[in-house]
Image 1 (cartoon, one colour):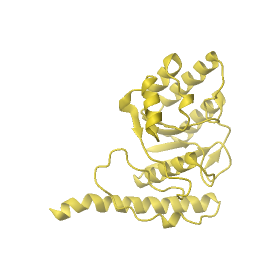
Image 2 (cartoon, rainbow, N blue to C red):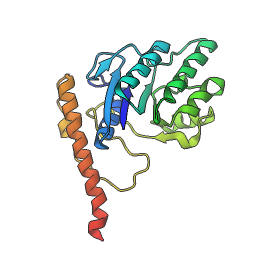
Image 3 (cartoon, rainbow, N blue to C red):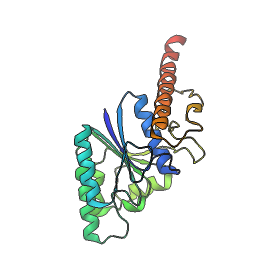
Image 4 (cartoon, rainbow, N blue to C red):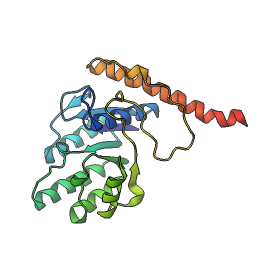
Length: 223
């Protein structure tokens, strides 16, 4: 698949950049293509203002240009949805987000601020259009379900803490086989350049792919 990854990105620090970098590493390990867009200058491929309807139009344009069929979108203040808007504006922005999500075979929202995803008339179109809602704690999951999100679409994934280098593998939602991931040494002491971070993330993706292949092969070897 070809993924459009939208959110804060390293070398920026915090849970948002860590979640985006983990998604990039995971998708590259699966053999997919990624194009990363961040709201501020970073090691992402591009950066642009990502607030409101203009952001939705820009992301739709980028999706066409990159021929993306998957979207991963971090929802937090400053990315698409704005806190403190009136009811009418909230409805418009969330309807636009729902239309954007429907462009993709897979549309994943990483929930950084659950308060931006209300239920009711504003939230229903988004919950209907999204493929998966990724949360990082049980409280967020419970809030989403209580506000009308389908429980089957809500998936818990742990995000590496701020001390973890960008691109460390996310904890899988439902592990099938235990995987002995090597330490992410290739992701340590990186310079703040896109080229070095991309090279390191790709190297880490190769490590993850090799670890998963070894885990899949282990049962056959034991048999």
